[in-house]
Image (cartoon, helix red, strand yellow):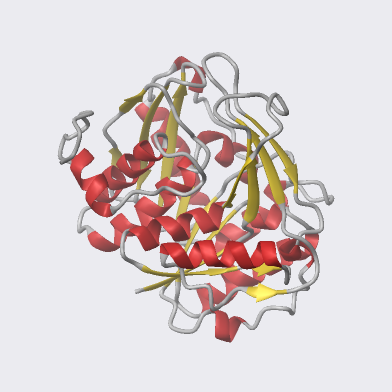
Length: 341
């Protein structure tokens, strides 16, 4: 099984601890980005995964590639081109003060890459599963064209396509609405991953779901996912994450899945004292892809994805630095704080 993810990886500059921007002149410098985060999760689980992206040819980008190699991600399909490495600034929230993200990613190398810059035959060599998110087509018109090309090329080759809808309102700035693009892209998708806002904003669907209630309305989520499956006959299943935000430091976390045959609901985790929630959705995607390829039961796959993303809330940085064994321990009921000796 060879997996390919396609999207932007950025330099992440985070304030120390829970300090505000420039409360301290120091930033923690790491790397992150939706599809790269998924690739790292899968590599940590022992899967053969490559990242397809475009980076500038400079020492900072070289460091980014070295970091991916450290985790075991295949970087041989990373292209170099004009443009820059995107940056995002993160201010971690706490209690009633929410986290804040500031993007500085215009004219990044992947955003300015031309539609003919990728050799899809080479990119998809030996690939069985392809993953993309709604962030990639939001970056620019050319990135949108590359995104649509990528899913069509994968679909035409019989490769399973997964897509995290991942709506980001601050990125759709080049004249297209998310729903104009994502509804076309979804025609080539087999496995969709989203939260309720992603579905509403990316696919233009209304919902009666009230997230602020802090409860999973099983029938409302089933109705919403049924609606998506009816609209996109190519879809095999859709998985939805549910976050109950009591504060920036305390969330409830669970998920559900509709595979046309059954509607599944996962175990719910009460997560207190959150370390870093950025990348939790990506860790869910990585966990789900792993689960769908390692378990016979779709419910087991969903449980693995939710447990993996639960653990991500205790890991600083974009990458989910946990193994499949770590996730299995939580699934088996070991959520204690005992020192592992």
